[in-house]
View 1 (tube, protein in one colour):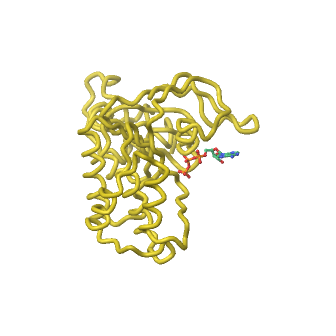
View 2 (cartoon, helix red, strand yellow):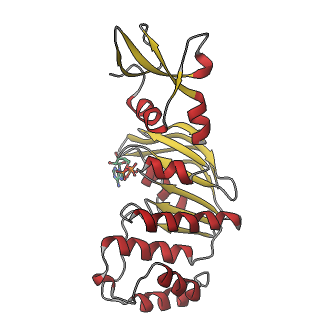
View 3 (cartoon, helix red, strand yellow):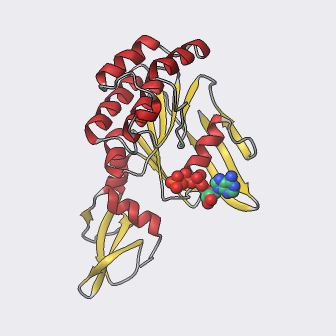
Length: 257
Ligand SMILES: Nc1ncnc2c1ncn2[C@@H]1O[C@H](COP(=O)(O)OP(=O)(O)OP(=O)(O)O)[C@@H](O)[C@H]1O
């Protein structure tokens, strides 16, 4: 999957600007950014749900999409939904899905009787039981408990061992740090970083300075602490910093108090 020079406007308002990136086969790519950054719009363009945009999107047709607003027929039992999927999508493996129900300890209940977290788990089960090359997932695990979330992550990782690729959005930085091979940071419709989190942590460091530079972080005595790129430093002393501090600095912007 590759995107070149993508631009998207709604009513003359720029929503996505000059987006360029690709997903490598067998990789997990996360897209993070504040509310309204354009993550869902980007995924909808990739899936073809939004057709009006400028630029090029190349994608293999064998993908599955987990939307942000998840809805299933409330009065159907899980088994009925599985049967419908089996009938209409020959990539859906019903036996695998039933095994996942056991693994995640779900009974064959009606959708209406499932808790929010269990509905999300069911969605992930459907996705994980569908044999695609690319998995496009909009906040797939946002209301799932930590233990089950980690189980789902293990199954996501297993997909990549079979050369499947995943692109997903999230607001949970610790989770992204654990799972993603590469992360795109999207802010106000622009990609401000596209790299592995290890590289980000290697590249951005904190320095104390009385001259403004890079991204303001906090006050320290008579000076300030700034987050800067290591290669922009000469001989100043620096400290390594955590990913959430780097993320916040990049989103808040240069010299922004
Ligand atoms: N159909 C639409 N018409 C007009 N503006 C829209 C439409 N859909 C989205 N937008 C705007 O596009 C911008 C990006 O929205 P989008 O839902 O892609 O953000 P997001 O990063 O997924 O946010 P969140 O993290 O809150 O889910 C927002 O300013 C939103 O108001």
